Length: 358
Image 1 (cartoon, rainbow, N blue to C red):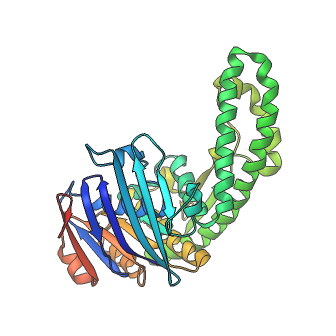
Image 2 (tube, one colour):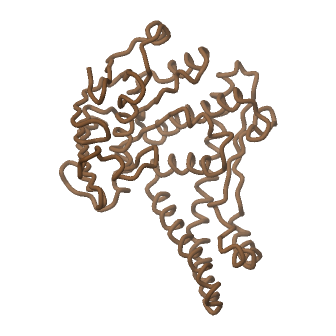
């Protein structure tokens, strides 16, 4: 699978952009604030409907304009998919596949498989549990539409329950309605827990193998799933925590409180790991993401590396680059330094200058 073309109009600092990448290695270089990351963001947006930055659509539209357009052609298993997106400031985005509008953004999942790797991902270990849950959910949603649907329903029920907890403060008679939402949370939450359990087992095996290669077999990486509740104990924990939930007006039991424990040689990296160990473990997780997607989808994902090489030492740079053979890759960097020139051959190079391509 690879991106055949990308066309942008009024997208961030680009008035117009037409990009014809190579199916292999593409380098996008230029100074700071020229638009390199915006190109990677557009590719990711075209494949997932979301910005990796979490940016709202209206903030993506070029300053002074009311609309933005994105068109991307994807080649997958000899099929050509045309994805069109129409961003408006005060309306939901319009999305079409092959000229046919789709009603839900989730319909795009599964067509395009992408892995986005930025310097922020190197902090996934030391950041809070929400970052590690996000890491799990992004991969699972990309590979399993049923999981995506269950996650959306769970979050909807969670928001409704939290809103009800606030309303009960003013009207205590509403407390009986909590039973309805508790049952819905258990229904969808149990499905999430089951899939996350399977995912973590696979991640532990894949990441452990990669980490041993990265560290010359000097470190054993283990990834374990820290469930907030077992499926069998979900109802009991909801009942036990109800009084506290009413006081705090927040739901305390469920997979929205899950975490991943990442340890090396039995040491919890979240607490005791050095910055170097945390970064190496994060790299192992991201490389695992590539392999797991390839195995599940039987297609290599498109890889987006946003200024990551400058954050890694030489050995880790070489390992990363040797792992992406036969994978369409977009690499942003500030300049074509000696490392890039000598370590591998780029198939196409783009120079970004003030919202334009040279």
